[in-house]
Length: 214
Image: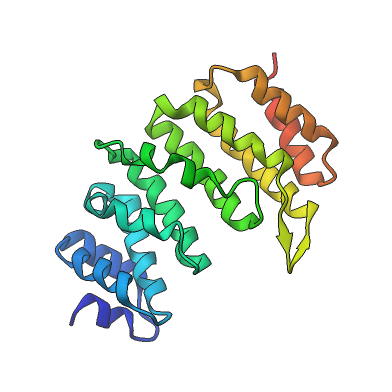
């Protein structure tokens, strides 16, 4: 049975399908082609499998980098969020520097209006910085834009959504702070969060500063 037919069945074991695809990479072509043309909700399963394969074996998915780069513009939020994570996974094997070509598009969501999209970009940034240290300073300049972001929830401005994304930013900086040249700018960003109205963000800022301020 084809991998797409397996994924169309109820109760399918996604993890088992991922194992199958890793063992038989030829099936990736079928999944990618189906992902591009399928209109039903099952395409979300295709995306999930391909994303998980990209986590384990990014070199198997890298030939389809452009497909996932295009999904960054998808009207389907779930496909867009998955593509954000997959593209980040692929930077580990990006010998052709394809990510640099889409850098601005990738980071465009941070100022708003969709918090979850921005949070996925911010949350994936440490992985990108670690895979491509030469982009560290550019990434470190993009993430703090969350400080002035304007997100909406149910059509209305939501400062609390911004606070959630700021917490994600602190977590991300924690993972690659040591390779940032302009550490003072990041410390200043985190210090501002000591006045954040969200208690969890204040706690993250305090932990970060205890470790990195000095």
